[in-house]
Every structure is written in C-alpha cells, then in structure tokens.
Picture 1 (tube, rainbow, N blue to C red):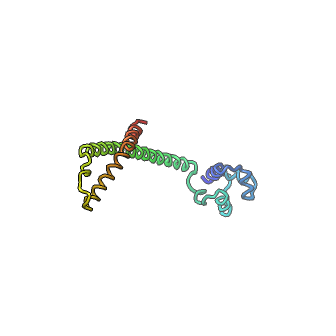
Picture 2: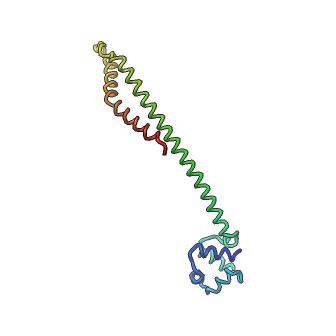
Picture 3: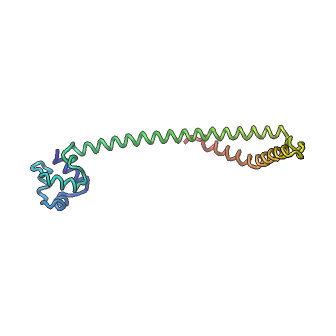
Length: 169
C-alpha cells in the first residue's frame, strides 16, 4: 500500500521518479524500488517524502490514495449537484414571488385610479382657512398629483415585468 501511495502522490504532483529522487537526495532506482514494493523508506525518509508531497505521513501509510480521491470527487460532485438544484429552486421561487408582486402592483394601481376617479377630488370644495383642513387637503392633492404622474410609468413597468417573469425558460 505504501508503494502505491508513493507512486500516486508522485504522479499527482506531476513529478518524475528522477525529480522526486533529486528532491530527496537519493538515486532514481531507490524511488523505483519503493514504488515497486521491493524496498521501504526508513522513518527519516518517510518524513522527507511527506514534506516533498506536502501531505502527512499518515496519508503515505494509510489507505489507497487513488480510491479516496475518486470517492472525494464523487462526493463533491454530488454536493455540487444538490447545491445547483437548491439554487435553481431559489431562482424559480424568487421569480414566482416577483411575478405575483408585480400583478399585485397592477391591481393596486388600478384600484387607486378607480377610487380617485370616483371621488373626483372632493378636497377641492373644502374650506382651506382651517389649518388642519388645509394640511389634509394639501396632502390629498399632493398624493393625487404624484400618483397621476407616476402611476402610468409604474403600470407600464409592472406589465413589462409580468411579461418577463411569466415566460418559461
């Protein structure tokens, strides 16, 4: 198992046997013998190998590295798939919420327009000499003035937004 781990780590780091041998100050044949299982590095050399591979000694002595990397990649890909599904659901939910908010905005604009049209600006007949009435009448007039100027723009934007968010992708 140690021989397979040394070979797998060397290849994963993109090193040749010669390059690893130079890093460890040994001959290439020594690295070859380790990888073939014909000899085993001593404890000092195991420490040097772990430093060269930037991995703990336990990894060198532990399970087969190739299998664990395959399992890790599979687990990571499964987690990414779950995350992608969650993001797609969130996007769909946000789109649906925005769609209904825009429909509600259109309904509110239509209702306020109908109410203002039915009332026909009753504040115009009020006695504005009374300060409280004057403030209230001015507030109604300001609201009506602002609404009449902004409602068409908001309505067009909301209808356009409903069209865009209601489309199937």
